[in-house]
Image (cartoon, rainbow, N blue to C red):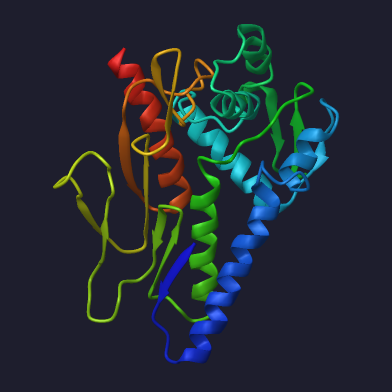
Amino acid sequence: ARIVLFAPDEAEAKAAAKAAFARMAELDAVLSDYRHDSETNRLCAGPAGRWTPVSADLFRVLERSGEITLQTQGAFDCTVGPLSRLWRAARRQGDLPPENELNDARLRSGWELVDLDPDARTVRLGVDGMQLDFGGIGKGYAADEAVRVLAEHGVDRCLVDFGGDVVAGDPPPGESVWEIQIETGYGEGRRPVVRVANAGVATSGDTEQFVELAGVRFSHILDPATGLGLTTRTAATVVAPDGATADALASALDNLERGSAE
């Protein structure tokens, strides 16, 4: 992650940046599906059908994920973890996943398998072996939180770039916006600039990460409908009021573009 900020002095800048990085590390321990000890993975390892208390962060991200899943008719879906893990293994091994394993993973995926109780702040997962994957919303949410922490430390003029998911606060001194160049990867001269303040910007695409299996070019971006990588080359940039929304919608647009191309 990278933070650009403007503060009255070096001491304030360092203190604010340290707190923001600490907040992002805290969220990694909550939302990561790569860390076996993350709160997300502990939730998924528990028995199905049981209401489980979760942190405010995990509940907020689940709640927002569900809203965007419904809005995008499943083009964004944080429950595709079983399919994500199968696809990662397929890319490493250089072979397509067996159909029976894909079918099994599909049965353990789907937002309809998640129940949320906002009053008790508890979550119930419907079947054993579910796996949540916040790869399409977690970085945006973490960048939002980093900007919020910076503001708490008196730093409103800031920009957080977390792996290409950007959240901008107030603009630099003497400027009305931040200028962010978008790396589409689709040739020289196609690098648009967006001008924003107090907004999230996210780009999702397959221009750099892809694999060829059985003579077909597959993206690293998972298609929830098939459980395989996208085969249509796409890139989408979203500007939204916050980073979590921009992150999730950029991921969803890649899949919606796949749908329109078929």
